Image (cartoon, rainbow, N blue to C red; front, side):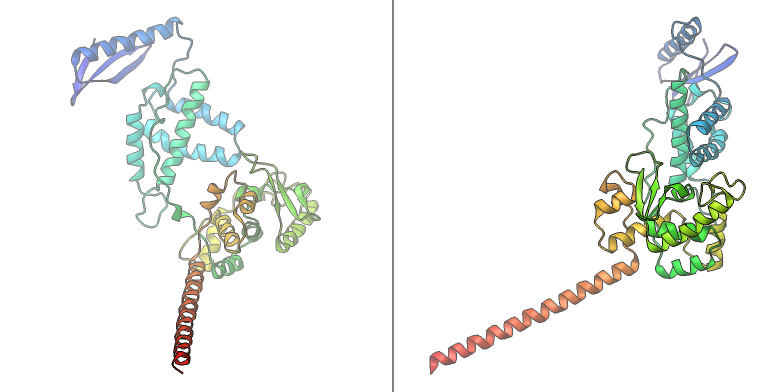
Length: 376
């Protein structure tokens, strides 16, 4: 038996089935470490002998490809693309390791190191955001859940790892001035997509996948049949502006023989997948310094709808939320709305002071008159 001390903890190392097993025993006592190594050997032998009907864990790189193939078949293109992107990052940290060698301690180390890396293609020294790290952790967690479902003998090391808190102020609301210059500089189909989001609150991918058959111009609604929840699968009312631009888009879809009103430029039988480059270019041309995401147009709709006194249950139904608590996260009073609220408050306060002073004067005059009357 080979045990050795690393710091204050004893580790063991041995070979089994052609692979090197080198792990921390978790103990500071040598005798306990030897027992841990013996138990680890026994567990491996029992699995090989068939006492435990599980499969040996593969290396991370190999299983990542299995997971992505499964994701490609099970998930929407956007979800699959996110997993594929995250796997590239995860391979840098866990590549070469077997799944059952990855510990919670390693995941915590990944979380810390990744958070302090510089963002790729960033023009400044901005670091990777907590949201980006959280998405990678979610992919890693999903990989281990899938490994368990496939019968591999692994324990999910991400369970119990605390995610970074995502600040609510990351949700941007654009002003009407920004909207005007942005739409003026936006190319098509970005301009129509943006206007649809601003007037309906639809998610970008929900707009991308609008089919002509799901638009009811008589009822003035758009049916969204997709979504993880029942609330997400909903009919969204249209404004006159959205109705007009979708009528135009529907005629173009008929001409192209495509079911989608926003078809892909590469294959009209599929929906457009992204307008990210067009969005960035529009902000560059509009010289918008405080950048916003396309998704923020949804936040903008929600904020404006709340400011127009739309009740929250109705807004939640339009946005496709299962509860009002989720809707509240999307309602952010803009700076102009806050200024109007303060002006209303000042006006209310000034009128109240004037009325109170008038009442006091009136009360004083009445008292004086009454007193003089008694004297006479």
